[in-house]
Image (cartoon, rainbow, N blue to C red):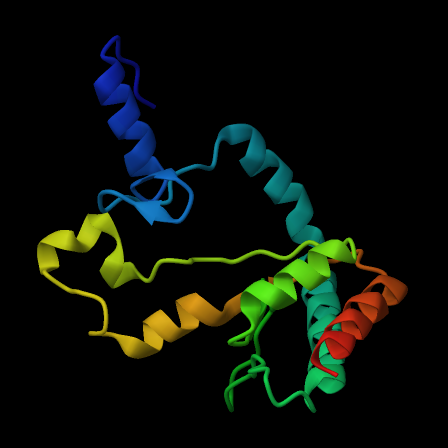
Length: 172
């Protein structure tokens, strides 16, 4: 905890605790993930009892997405590496048509997110490293094509079917 009458110090502390960011996904300095307060910790402690059930549900939903969307050439889907199993905190697809697909899904009432739109080497926090656009083309391609689909415990099967249908219809 930090208390200070100095507004500039308070602002800097808020940035440091939130990955070095004032605006989500835009890091000005190298920071930390220090945003869990006592109340959130208490909720988390109770929720931990459901973790295995929720992770199983996330994997089931991810499997449904992967099976239904696997035939779409314009999509790159997530996959589990051999010997590993994701809990699918996010289900991130990649497509060069990200903006158009996101607009299409938004019009259909489906919320999506673009997580990490700026790759780390292009963040202001790492400007001192001297990296520039084009030096990490894979990271830049992922940042420009990634789109997170709805996936969470409680997503109903009919809702997921609607999402799948809208994605399939977009690419037809």
